[in-house]
Length: 130
Image (cartoon, rainbow, N blue to C red; front, side):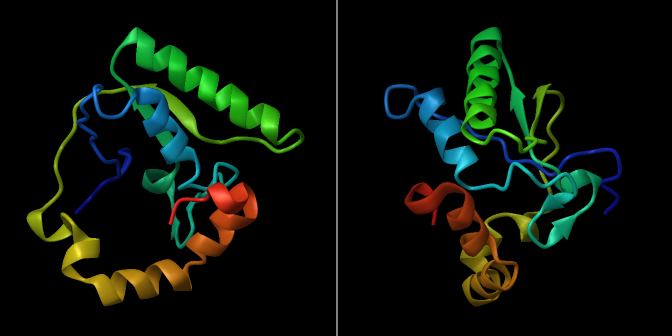
């Protein structure tokens, strides 16, 4: 489909009794390469750039603080992850949903081939998400 002008994103629903927004932010950062202005790993282009979409002032403040913390941790490197207000969210076709579960071999090859784990470990060390 034509995703031009849109970001590919996931919508996260969470129970604040079980996980905090801050913990979600911490998980987000160690799963990405915040220094890539072209996209993420193998996926390059406008719709693959990293961004955090916030839905209220508290999320917005926490996201901004987390971005500043990442920037402070890596002086001299530009963090390209954008902070944006959450707008309309359109779910993608069913066959794209849970791709990693439906096609585990293909997904793991793609992930390894794209250097995702190697790159996140380079940036985040042992904190990198697996």
